[in-house]
Image (cartoon, rainbow, N blue to C red; front, top):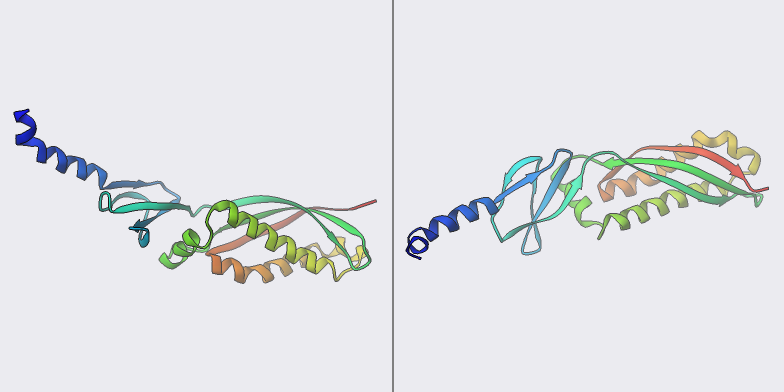
Length: 174
């Protein structure tokens, strides 16, 4: 008991020292909040935070991500076109403002994915709706360019960049 009274403050200082250390993995950036308000970002490696007051709100991956899409669109001559495509995207850059956008624009990654998928599908559907069935197979590159042009502004506002969109398969209903 006498040991704790004499050296208790040393144990508290050591404990606070360990609680103030934060490790951020390579390929990610951590967003720190204090009392629920944005405070700063932490880069990969060993970082220091104020114990108890500062909390890691979210860890943002800055690596490329991909998602597979399957959906249907209707041409101007009422033909159903089935698309299979792959979307490759990443965080726009590692600037503090961009990371804040990525961390706080959407409640979860699932909500981001839903918005991203719906935006891409909507762009392709609106383009296909102005073309005839016979033209669709020849316009694969034009469809990709149109979609990139349409959604790049939205994605930049969210803090992301569309790296690539590949339309892997286009089929028509019989």
